Image 1: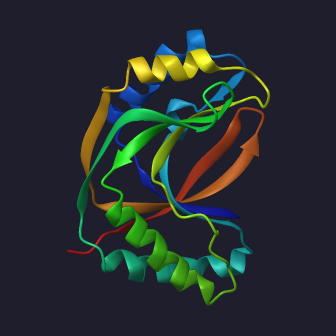
Image 2: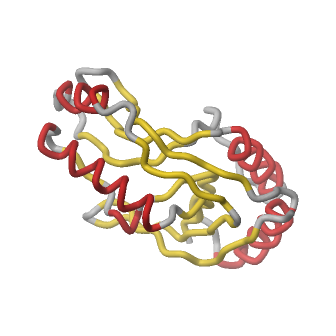
Amino acid sequence: MNISLAVTIPEEVKYNLAAGIQRLKPVTLETLWVERDQLQLPIVTIGEIAPAFYPHIAEVTNEICEQFAAFTLSIFGYGFLGTKRFPHQLWAAVTPAEPLVAMHNELWKAVAKFGFKKPESPLTPHVLLGICKTGIRNLSAVEAMDADENCEFGTWDVKRVTLYDCKTSKRGKVYRRVNQFPLGG
């Protein structure tokens, strides 16, 4: 199993994100776009685990989730990784980051006892929209995102975290929901 924990995005917000992708498609070259049903907000990507580890990961995830109260998230505006001329990833911004970062840190502390190592880079909450082919000039995509910077994709109350099994396909990553863990409070 290839495990990740994420906040599931409501259908209405996914619809708005998909509409944002449609606005970017005509001005973006050679980009692998995330399918609407695969849009999610990752918190922790553990990676490949043996099926025997799953009950342990589920137990600590449930314990951590019980420590966090439900909270409200908003997705608005765009961002990218790479340079303006050669962006690599296109994404939508998430706020507030604090509850997600705190949950990320606590989950990593919990799974560290099983030998999993936390990535060096800090969590920057975002929703991946597309991955641009390396070396392709996509300045027009960044300009389109800048012109649409005030777009709001939606706001919702987060009440649970979802554990996904991730498989790679020709369409990109495909996430299958394995379990959900309610937040406490």
